[in-house]
Image (cartoon, rainbow, N blue to C red; front, side, top):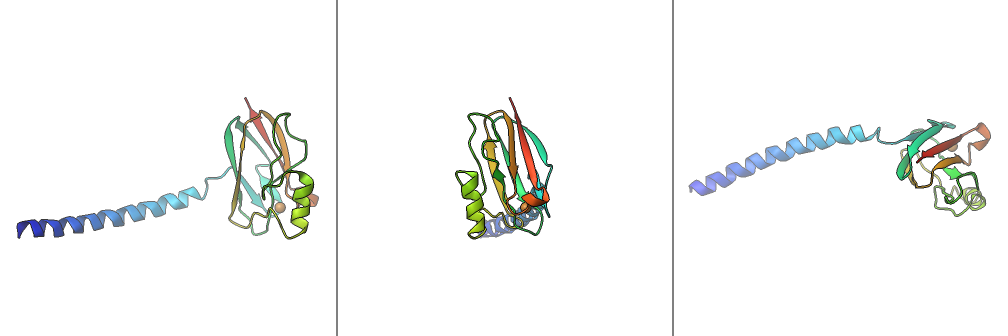
Length: 143
Ligand SMILES: [Cu+2]
């Protein structure tokens, strides 16, 4: 009888603890909303130039309402580095074609794209639909 009472009390405590955890998770989820490196607005990357150390991962987030892409300029990155683009295209021409054919590589509002940079140097990139509006950026990777 005593044991049964004890278990019931334990369950009650566990349930209070769980509610506390849920509240905490909610708080940390909203803090995560700022957990990106480059935001994408109407027709700009912010910051347009970002410096990171080799081996670091850069996270872009579409903080605006329009679709954007993150697309490297062919060859405008250090020797030994690879082309990169949202949508996973192998080169700039394919990325542009993919976009024309149905918004391939689109990063929708609230979505993220990330890329890890291993080779030091400057990487130039742009957003396909907003390139005419000057939506370009660069990542500078240091040793
Ligand atoms: Cu854009």
